[in-house]
Length: 476
Image 1: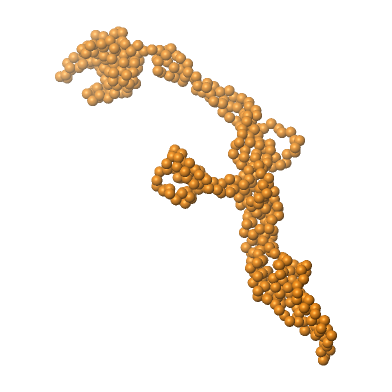
Image 2 (image 1 turned 60 degrees about the vertical axis):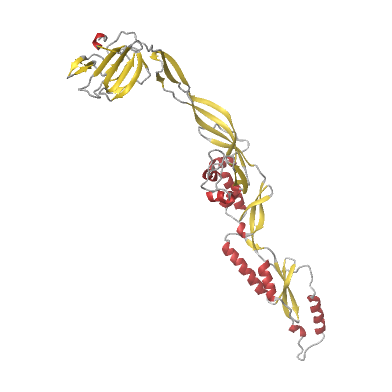
């Protein structure tokens, strides 16, 4: 708010001057000059625009002060001013012709409060506003700290151009170059106080950018919830943008949805060196072993990962990696191979007819023949040195599992030469139907499952379907 004389004259001053000349030639009976009856009016200007005349400029000042005071209460710590300069030109007149209320109404409606702020401009366009130059600088710093650490930024800003860089330590990183992709400037600006934001909000404005509507093509496996989450939207946002889509209906592959997406106003390009300790995968190797049965495997050596130190040169744009190149690599520890032994020995599957004893020692606790009013089809062997049950000859497992006929866990082996053997009452079974077995191979553990009087092996032998006495063919 200033006082001053605008360059443009106004007609009432000519008229007032003429009256003053006439009155000056006369005096009253008391000798007083007629000029003493003049009154002062104030011509009010907004910039160069003439508003009108008022008898009391204090009323105009009061309107302006009230408007400014209210704005200052709402926007603390912001430098405020009026959008137009108000000036007064006084004039002494004999007859007062003023428009006090009209002028006050015009001032109230046409004068607004604006902030003396700072704009952050990107490629010549103002993007966000803060209260002063320091805040504008802090906005750009806050934007940088969204993508690099405070220590990295301080080290970079304090580094001299000719300073040689030491070797990076393990898992360390440093900035090589830091720049904005766009042209960025900060400038003084006069704006609506409501547009002035905090440093944090301004940095977020630069990062979040301009929101635009785009098409999204539905892919296999997509759901509304996943699409919304991927684009930082809510389900309601998606449904508002796509009126024909129902929340409880499945999406069709290839269907197009309208989504909102944003493009940052500002992009920061960071080039840096990054050191990482990384694992070196071990190799998996398989070695043939003729002493092991074909199909069997055994781990000879457990693999161990190695370790290497790798230094990368990385370029990022707003945190997204644009390129990553290996600058240096050093092996710190070599890996150890994972080695598996694979059996190659073929099992004939056909017996030779020369049966071995099915247990490690033991005695015959019950022979074949009549027993307890029934015929005992095989022999029972009890109390061996251990409970391992072995196949008496090469063959193929015909069946292996539980039997409801009193045998409990039962194995039947077809020796592919007319012979079959049956093993009953096992505590556990180690083979399965269809498996080839070698003479002397473990097929299970002795037990007392089924109708048994104690821990023992019940074994039966058949030749071409005819029952034989096991003692005639088994050799202990």
